[in-house]
Length: 331
Image (cartoon, rainbow, N blue to C red; front, side):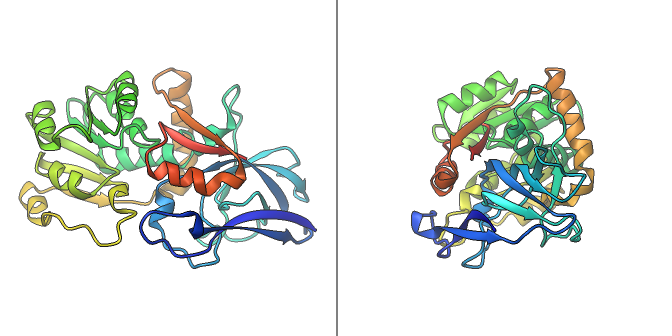
């Protein structure tokens, strides 16, 4: 029997996650059958969305990882090959490719040859965050040259990419982040205006940076920020709702201005999304992002932390803004 470790939800979240919400357990994996293989985690992802989901107590914390095949009875996945998969916070995973690829089973892809690039990028710019930025922005906002784009959470794994894609499309880009270091990095990516949301009046900043209004808004934050941002949208503006990190740890629903009449009178398109809707197009998005990296058109940054046993601590630091770019855990 092969042993594995996994982090499970020990208690339901209430407010900010705490150590008591997590428990490290050991499990034994069954002997391999024909067609199956076992992967050992190399890099694991921590992402804000992990706090937004409801988990049954006792279930493994969800998430994506890059893993190396350590045992195999599948000729297509030999020992040593790298696999990107949604197997949760597990140190070792048994994969059965014959199972149907639905939302309840492990989704996986081979990690393509990245050359000199680190395989951790398969969890960032070439993974779920990169595909979130690529499809969530381009498909929903459909930006046009000369338009003004607003991105909050712009120093994060997704927001930093959205802003750069918008610049490549010929747009003016406004970003908001939460520290001087983050704002300086976002400016270096080519954003036209960058503000520290902790130090400025958002309404005044948007009047200053977008006197002619905003055409596209990519929202990672929600809450009061979005209530303010919607007032600055132009007629027929497009809003792509990626997340709402401002409310993930809230114990009560946020109370803010009623947004729907603004949406009606400005005739806004507001669409939320989960990136898996484009799962069957991920290879297309990855190829485009890799090309942009190779051409020097898009930059990225990783915050790499160490240790599978530190997963909860690293995740909790992410929710407090400890990352610049993508945060990954080196197992």
